[in-house]
Length: 252
Ligand code: HEC
Image (tube, rainbow, N blue to C red; front, top):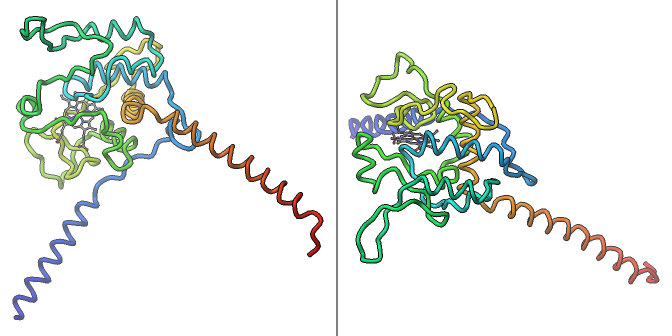
């Protein structure tokens, strides 16, 4: 009985230690995003740069299945630009005889994934799976800050952390060891608008782009919300004025 008690106590201590270890996770840095808040809006210039970062860097490993090329018009790209982006990709399709072919992409195609399926992707990344990024900002707690912190947060491991083979130290990732190599480095892309491509800038831009991918209707939703608020405010004022008018001659 006594030993059993000690056993349970030990188990409880272990569980608490595990919870404590999980809590060691670094809290994401907190950035001021333009798309946040009641009047938040999409910074199209940043989103366009973010699209460039996704295309030239992240898309080598991560798919973006839920976005189609024609959606890029939301970011202010012209039809000619979007057609050129789509046409530079090869899409698997069938010809009129039912034969498998590869054809240039069209505006209506969804973003072409880097691998045909999850197994192929895992095989290329030592068993780890680079998740589809379409909804990642919504799928993680504090998504925008988390993704920003994760992709800028690589660094040398503290000496008390045991290295894991083929993994990289990142204090923002659960268990601190991630199979993604640090994806960004100074000047990795050349921005067309002349913005210096620092690691922080590229990370911010790609988060703005991924935020849009996860919630393309955000601006519209917020605009509708604001309109409803204005309407309700006016309505309240009117109702109050009417009430006073109706009860004007009634003595208390
Ligand atoms: C060389 C391949 C590669 C590139 C390039 C790459 N990633 Fe990853 N990424 C991975 C792999 C592999 C994982 C899965 C890691 C794991 O499970 O340990 C991952 C995981 C992630 C995750 C999920 C972390 C989580 O909480 O599960 C995010 C977010 C992410 N990557 C964002 C990005 C962004 C943004 C870029 C572009 C700036 C990028 N990645 C570029 C390979 C890559």
